[in-house]
Length: 257
Image (cartoon, rainbow, N blue to C red; front, top):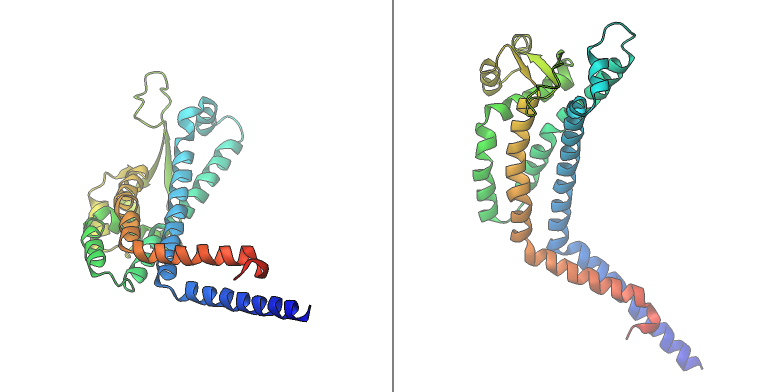
């Protein structure tokens, strides 16, 4: 009887030691860091993308609601609906613009630690269109304008000719004043060039969509699959360790040999 108890105790000690060994091995494995990095950047991208889609939904809501269009345009009743809509727009816009630089800034910090020279070189090459884009320069500085200076003035333009409207033309346009924005002295040369290329009033949709297209091409189309491919063996290795850990822990001491 005592021998059996000692065997159970030895098995339990061996099991606990193996659990600790696997825990340590998982934490030290380079695949753990690679997977954590990938998930972190993916999370930021998902936040930014969700913010963009929410803002687009708010901007496009009048396209699908003649009643909302009427409330946005009317001036014979209290503007309750219009003011509520404008607040929803302001919130969605602020959430998106605040996240504009987060993704690029986080990625820059991550890439400095990536020990994959070919991946890093290709990232730098593919970052070129973003760096060279006057729209991206505008969006980066526009974020600073909104966060550190003032909320921009938007002019609401409602298209009332619903029956003969071009389906590609939005019912509602939220317009920015080029000249009013240019009064701020915080624009970079690229951002200022972008603004000077715009008409005196321009729809916020245009830079929003152009910037999102750039980010989609860089991250969704290339960065995430390329990062995974560059770290495939490490991520698979830590996955195997995690699978073994789950098996050992799930089985308990009584099944461990």
